[in-house]
Length: 211
Image 1 (cartoon, rainbow, N blue to C red):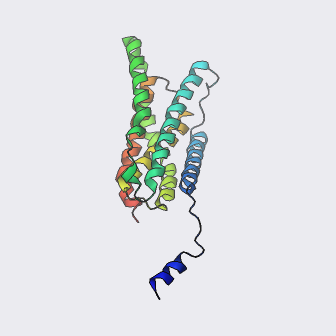
Image 2 (tube, one colour):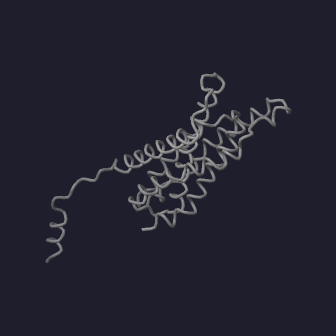
Image 3 (tube, rainbow, N blue to C red):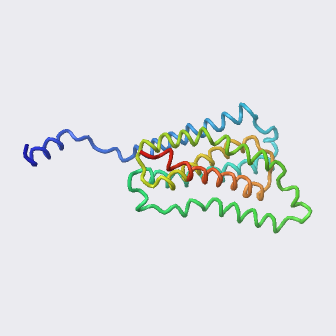
C-alpha cells in the first residue's frame, strides 16, 4: 500500500473534534462533586439553624463566595491542563487570587477588631480541619476519574488543581453547617484546609493520573 493510499483511508469519514467536551465533562464532575459534598453535610451534620439571622446569612454567603471563586478559577486551569501538552501554555498562578482576597479581608478585620475580640474569632477549627478534607474525598475521586480519561501530561499540577477544586466543593458544603463566623477563621481554616486538599492532590496526582 502506497503512502497516499494510507493517508486517503485514514482521512475518510473523520469525525470533527468536539472542542467543548473537556469543559462539559469537568463541569459535570464539579456538579456531581458539589452535590455529593452538600448531600454529605446535610445528611450527617445538618444545616446551621440560624440562617434567618442577617449576620449568619452574610457570613454564609462569604464562605460560599470564597469556595465558589476557588472552584471556578481552579476549574478553568484544570480544563487547560487536562489536555495533553496543556502545561506548555498554562500558568496556574492566578488560581491563588481567592486566597489573597480573603487573606486581605481577614487582615483588615483583625486591624479593626479590638484585641480582646481576637480569641473569639474561631473556636471550631478542629472540626473544620477534619471535615473539609474528609468531605473532599468523593469530589476528588470524581474529578480525578474524569480528568484521567483526558490523558493529562503534567500530573503533579493537574492533581493539585483537582485537589483544589475538590477542596472548594467540600468547603462549599461544609459552609452550610459551620457556625464559626469571622473572616480570619475563613481565611485560615477554610483556606488552609483547601490548600491541604491541593497538596494532597499534587502528591496523589502522579499515581492516580498515570496512563
